[in-house]
Amino acid sequence: MKITGNKIYELLQLWGTRKDSLETEFDDALMVFENEEKRSPADIERELMDAEDAVVTLQNAQRAFNRQVKTRDGASLDAAIKLQGTLKRAVRRWTKALQSSGYERYTRSKEMDYAKPTIKKDDVKKMIEKYTKDLLALRSAIGDANGVALELDIPDSLTS
View 1 (cartoon, helix red, strand yellow):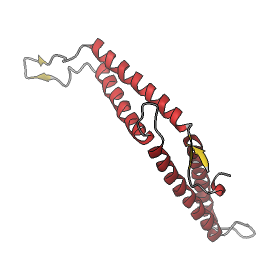
View 2 (cartoon, helix red, strand yellow; view 1 turned 180 degrees about the horizontal axis):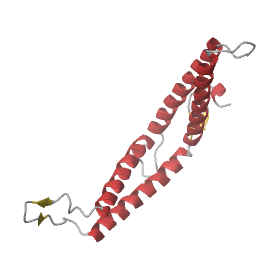
View 3 (cartoon, one colour; view 1 turned 45 degrees about the horizontal axis):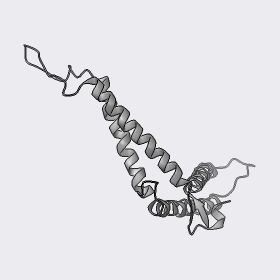
View 4 (cartoon, one colour; view 1 turned 120 degrees about the horizontal axis):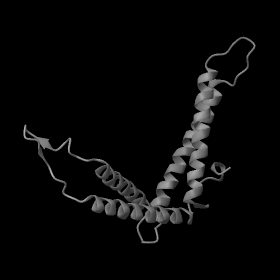
């Protein structure tokens, strides 16, 4: 079947929600009051196992999709997604550097010898801006790549 990364993501969310609901229903089905009717835990378990299998199948399809699809700069979608985490951490580090005066951490002895910054605040701001722009461009490329339709072996029963 031809499918996009966006559709695989949606299906994973749907099947994950079904699985969570069934787990809640299973727990509730373990006890019953007199004259109360509930589905049997065994029936719920069968459905739950099917939902678990669906999630595994879709996760495998997502991994295959991410390895095969390329972003506009030629990187695999898998690599781009991992790079996104790297860029997020870079933005967070530089933002933290901007927010910290650092003096509390970098003082010594009775004379209060202060360490001096190794980079100007304006240069820190430039680094934040650079990594933020890189991150936004990468997110856009990831979004475009997830819109590509690819032929993958996903049972029709998982898409309804």
